[in-house]
Image (cartoon, rainbow, N blue to C red; front, side, top):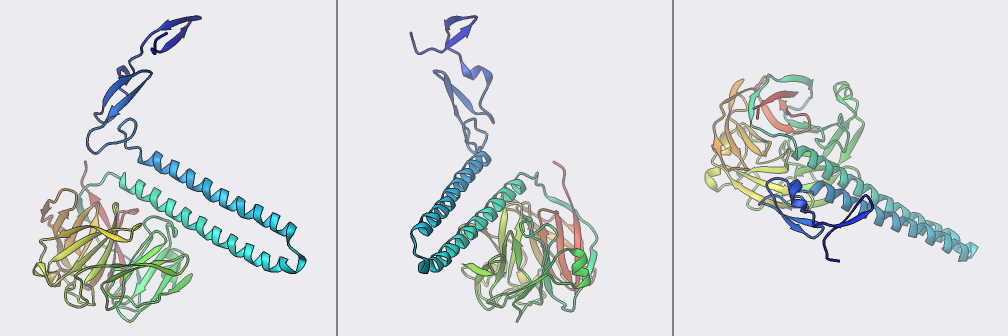
Length: 386
């Protein structure tokens, strides 16, 4: 008998070599190679997986299952160790053994919680990346939600939803501050009912802080560092250096130590910042939130940052607002980080209260959040059709 596939047909064994490639098993233009009882796909650039379908999601799910199984085995081992240990420990030693066991379990639960958060972050990023991104076509009129005492500040939601889809975080002022306020929802924010306050180990500079998953990212005062602060454990997990940045040397037109502006879009975390080089124009860095490092650098041909109102990132495109104080202004610069194309979109933008010191994009809601002369406002966005 040869290696050809055997088919059972009405009780009869038939020697037939099935050509699996006849069913076009490969996706996205992949080429199928017929083998004995199987096939291989030769994938074009940019595609991978058994069928050239970019199996990243299934690979992620498999990795998750493996990690959960490993954590389950660790937990089971701890529990079995406790039982065996308790059976052999003398009464006087049981109390010390209990405290050790309790501490080990607590550490394990922390590890499991962190893994859950990481999984949620990865899944959310995957979902956001699959959104059909296009360029912004227009910006709606600002909608005012609240007013606070400070003229400058930042407010935001977690676009990944890990900290709650309705939870609001507030960073008031731009200097000499280290307390972040958390509000359960918009109603509590308007009523001034704080759910929690976080006291950071450092003050922040500017109004460029963002919440992304369980982390708050902000520019540490008088430094070139982005601090990654875990809102669940209330600990600093990393400090990312922005090489070449000097406090106070270049900033948005309204000043306020606003030279480092963090941003979030469908692709993840960015930092927009000003340097004394490049004719004082804007730089953009893409941040790897897992490795806590800079992965891509963009040198932009914007107007000088000191003449710019603000900037934000949406769908991988960097947008610059001409003025922070003119009631009627425009988005006058756009740069597509995917293609390298830049243009003047000439999109109308309204600074309703004529002192807009914070503009950030929320990729989950696809709106802009802004802090304009004590008022917290949002802007609806219209994107181009495919």
